[in-house]
Image 1 (cartoon, rainbow, N blue to C red):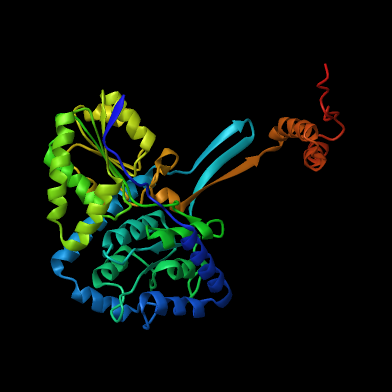
Image 2 (image 1 turned 30 degrees about the vertical axis):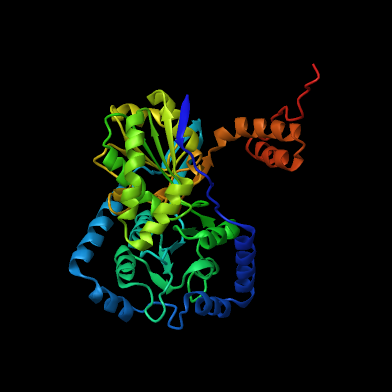
Length: 437
């Protein structure tokens, strides 16, 4: 049983007809006009008249502007994210097995050839997104990594983002944002190889462009507004819970946050604290957080921890933070989330910025069927097989009969010819089996 102490008045919209129509027009024009259209859109939307490719000199100048303490922080985050990605990479291995005597089959792990990493700009400078996407592609062994981010008029990409992109191993960096940025990487403009995959978060226009380009290129996932859930029992600290909810609400007006609890006093206390915490934020953050809290936030009261777990699995949040007793029970029980945060000692903000696991995660319930960005997204698991002549007989006989059952005579004959060559003069029953009996 569950009771809503606070219920959302609206639901997040990941796109609209207007967004789809505009993105479709932009992509069609870029397909026809190429770099000319890309530059025009950059002038129109980013107010950018400078170089598209960021030069080595510009990267060095940007690095010189970044305070040493901030460089240390970026290097700290990069080391953690790289270490976790390397651990993921170690779980992927080649293998081989003898299926039947004389038939060997196996798999190989092959990195894709080129990746395009989108790093959001706009209100916030997402240096962490640069680290998450580029580092992970680098650890996977991708030979060419392009990255782009919206330039600021007369300035370009902010220095800290450029420093992070360069540190993490981007081969080429583009002063491009929005639809034109992802399209340029997908099409291979400005001397780039065409991207095999586009990754990284972005606004609704970037998300829609990736959706429309999917098939021509791979993408990490279809992303909507970010969302977060806190699951808490009576042992939780109401103030910490409230801070965590507000911290995630500041992502934007359409970012849902949920509190799921079996303790009504905790829920009431959080509801009391949150408005004051929002009011204390800087104005640019305050308006986003207030809109998200007022319109999108929900507080759900449950009877038991099992009910709480069922609510969490049904919602499949991007971020799921458990602040409750017996954390091992929750780790074993929960089934649907983008990334799981266990205990009050951690927070989604750690995962967003520095702790190691990737912050590019499934939203809008997609955690029911997929995980987040990882080295696996940049790798192809391909298979191979090799047969010796003794293995041909059982393989060819069964293949010929199944092929004829399916009406695929050409397939059957490619098996027949091997039997004829390797076992001359022998008779085989290779016709369609009689299934009428």
